[in-house]
Every structure is written in structure tokens, then in C-alpha cells.
Image (tube, rainbow, N blue to C red; front, side):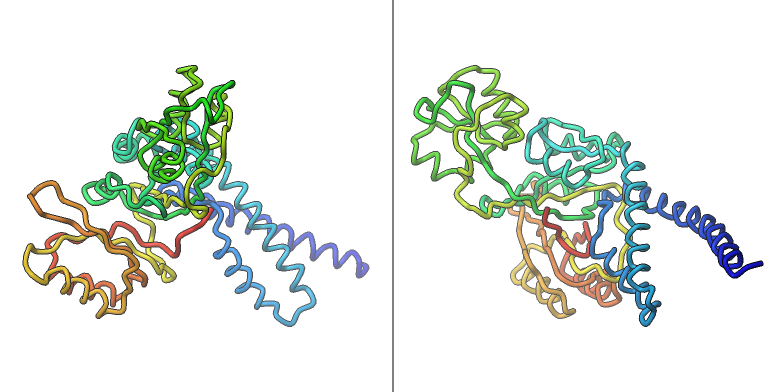
Length: 362
């Protein structure tokens, strides 16, 4: 046997073993896809990919093959992601609104392979996941300019779903009218209260009458169906295309950094990871002087930083409130368990609704 034949024999043997390992790897990838579907997680995780590549590349630290091996790893990952995307094509994602609404846009950005399903309101979309109609739901929890979405925070407190990710989506509001309409002809604007608030100065400047709609895309649909040139919607470019409206003016929201935070809710909590550094905690405190202060001091005492603390009425008792807290630190550690136990001395209800590595900007 010549040296060439020997080399080819080795390659054939390695390729045979690699085929078996490839099947084993793809079987594992299938399990990862199932987990991501159940927990409402994105397929792509760039930070995780770079971590894996850096770790494995160190095995060939001083080898001339290192750069080729890195390319080999990246190719494997691309194949894995393509397979996961195909497996997730049957995933159903609920959102509140109609096509062209910002929640619809967010859902498609987070889950580009999934079927997005529209519901008339936040609760209906949330309940679709509770009842098993959909795999997860994408709901807005806060706008950088116009504040919290209280209804969604209430669903997080009273409901049974878990938040497995927060995503920041840049929001651009536009003035949309029927063909033939002009800014001068517009007398009335229709949109969701949040959008109207984001564009308050613009509306005031033009003296427009305000009319509220369930969401921005519904507003666009209403304007399109009315056929009137004196009424306009405040909505997205996607809504303009969907309902054949003309963009009379763009970027009419007051803030150029207008961002909405969307939460992905699912029935199953994401598996706790050592790299989790953010958590969402909901709790109530006794109605007595200093109770909230003591609860907050407990959180700080165990080394966790509060990024946000917001109160909402429980609606069960007059002047009774629950608190929505976003914190930094891994709450799934022994220290986290100790903190929750200590917090129990001052809180009658404690609910960890989410734990994840970081908030993602799309």
C-alpha cells in the first residue's frame, strides 16, 4: 500500500466515525430546538457560539490547523442553526394586535421561523399560551418614553407563565393617511394610547384631535377602511404597507431613542444557568411602616442590585400593592436562595418570574 493509499484509508475511517458523531450531534441539536420551542428562546445565541469556539479552539492552541478548525466549528454551528430553524417552523407565537402592529414586528424579529398568531388583547394572547394554543407570547412591558404597560405586569403577577427573555425593539412612529391625504388635511389622529403619548408634542403642535385604538395597526386599518383624508393613523411602516396607506411624515415620536421592551412568556421556565445575571422578581409586603424598605435592604444585603422597582395595585384589597423588581445577579445560586428565604420574613408573596443572561437589542 502506498503512502497515498494509507492516507486515504485514514481519511475514510475518520469520515466514517465523523458521520456517526454527526448523527449524534444532530440528535442533540434536535433536543436543543425542542427546549428552545418550549421555553420561547431564540435559535441564535452569538455569545454562546463565540464562547464555544474560543474554548474548543484552545485545544489546538499551537497547531497550524487552528484557523481551519475554527472554520469547521462555525460551519457546524451554521448547519445546526439551519436544522433548528426548520424544526421551529411549526412554532406558534401569540401577540396582541393585528399584522403590522409593533408586537407583530417584534414577534417576527425574535422568532423569524415561527407562525405568529394575532389576538385581540394582551390577556387573550397570554391565555393562548396558558391553554396550549400557542408555544409562547410576545408582549410589551415598557416603553422608554411612555413608561410601563401595567396590564402586562399584572398578567406576570397573577398568571402562571414565565419570562424567559427581554428584547429591546426600536420604535419609529409615522403619520399614515389614505392616498390623497396631506398633513394639512388631517384633523384627527388614531392610535394606541402609548403611541399617542410618544407623539404628544407633534399632535399638540398640529392641533390634531386624538382617538384611541386597541393598537397602532388597528388604527391603520381603521383609517384605511374609513377612506377619509382628514384622519390619520400613528403606526409603523409595516402597517402602512399592509393597509396601503401613505406615509405623510416619519419619525414623529418625540424621542429618537424610542424603544419598547418586549417580554417572551412561556409555560416552562428556562433552565437556570451559571451565566444568568438578570432576574425578575414579583412580591408583596405587609401593610406596615418600613416593610418595603426592609425588603429592599434584604436584596442589597445579599449582593443583588435592583435596576428597577415598580408598584402596581393588587386589585384585591384597597391600597394593597405588589412590586415588580428587576435585579442584577444570579438568583439561582445559594446566595440567591438565602436571599429569597430572608425576603420571606417581610413578604407575603414572592414569585421569581424570570432569570436570564442579558437583555437583547434587536
